[in-house]
Image (cartoon, helix red, strand yellow):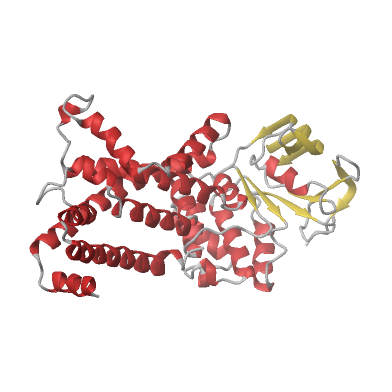
Length: 207
Length: 227
């Protein structure tokens, strides 16, 4: 079952395309890497797939934004005023069990009650990922959001990627050899309006 | 100095009249500020999200209305609330309620216009995060207004300063009735016309002290600590 289907999708701002997606189908539990140099439109592609930006042209079908749908995580996540737990509860829409499970998954429970202003970047990143997980997404779109994780956070995150086969995970990265086992790789080709195309045979190594 | 010592004597001796006048001033201004906040914060928040020419017109109108002369607001509401006016049947003229209405009209544009600016200046990531998490409209309002609270609280302070120290609307709509609608500003004007400038100045000192105390208190507690 696919959660996102895009065909001839032009993405951009104010009706101007900055990149296009020839064809992309993301199935339930898939792992996908979207690679490309800085400024090639990775963020715009991810935000469009996450339904934060309206498509400029083409077809985009699948889940919408929000719980049970697509959740986008910024490269340097925005956390709302309050504790880490407050933030994760926002993602869980009040469901405390979901929030606690998500915090445990990211190994973030020990510092979750601290105010977000007192947290390190790595801790903030873990809270943001837990907040996204707590929303029980069908697809999680990470805009290099795993790059700022500290050692413990990375270990916990790899565990999530390896075990949560109920969630499709799309990661934007500079290069295709990111640390997402079993991921299909796509790259934004060079050009005035880059096109997202599959990288044949490029699979990240299995764990 | 005599004004200061007169003021101190008035406060220390617990002049019942002065206490009452001060209480009426605070009641009217705080009631107006509460109403203006309840309406103005959601209005500014909604306008911050609105696009198009209509939204731009409303927001520039709001900014213009922040400069409304208080006497003009007093006059316009006087015609509206007077016995022959469209809302004359409510018999509000020369009551504290009428003064609250007048000061609400003065405070609302400040609260709404500055909330609009405060919310617009939040980082795009704040809006995107709220949208991506699928927060309900009500939750979204609460968390985004919470993010902008430093600027919004200072807007509320500004609105309070405007209504607490204004004279025009209070005197026209309240009528300066002893024991009913006398406020610090209306009594200061009255004492001055009666030639009792010492008492007028003393009341001015009280007015200033309250304004200063409220600002200092709220500023240290809310504005400086918040982003």
